[in-house]
Length: 293
Image (cartoon, rainbow, N blue to C red):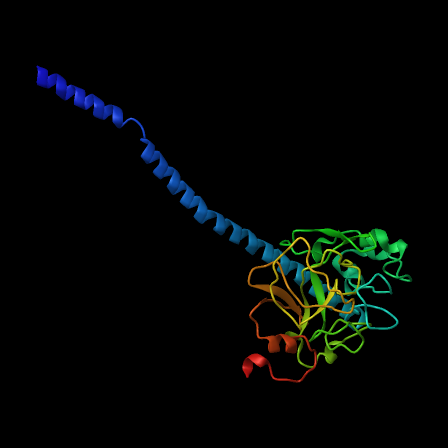
């Protein structure tokens, strides 16, 4: 009888131990869950960035189509910027209507276009209200900001997209060899290197005091002299030289979206051959593509 009671006791103890988790087992389960979450988060972030990049591609495609519609209507691409004389300084002095201003009617922004006084400078008080309106089509979804105050204190809507004015670092002027520059009226026949080989628009990171989407300065024009990823900071360094323009950049990982003159949108890696980038920024250099040499 004594042995029988001892056997029952052992059975009861075993049954009570199988009714729950020990501390070690609980910690193991929590560790496994933590590992799974750690594996899942990068995948979710990658999926979100892929969606943002796709939306950015769509923005650029719409801007490219609008420029083509401008060409169909007026038989030339819009001017990169307007001013009686050059070069263009990155200052709120001058006419400076951007190529984005010219295509407003073709991106379903006729009301904004009609509320601009085009007989005056884009910086005139009469145009201040329109300049302050953000354009969703001009903003990359990966961009963490939306608007900005200029050095004069004017609130302006930003742009993450800039037209290509030149193939190397140089002031924005009437003798640039890109497609969108000072008082330009480029036609397809002027793009002798081929519209599928010539950059029209690319992505940029605007500086904190950028003059906004309506200004035909470095805010909406860049060159292919530089193309590299710079780390995002709250205060991106501002060039001390008002004639400095700068190159393309983006908030995407690995590269940037570009619209070519034929309307196609391509994602170019930051490791793209520098000579090839220079050639794609020149509408008529007549050189063989660097990647074929």
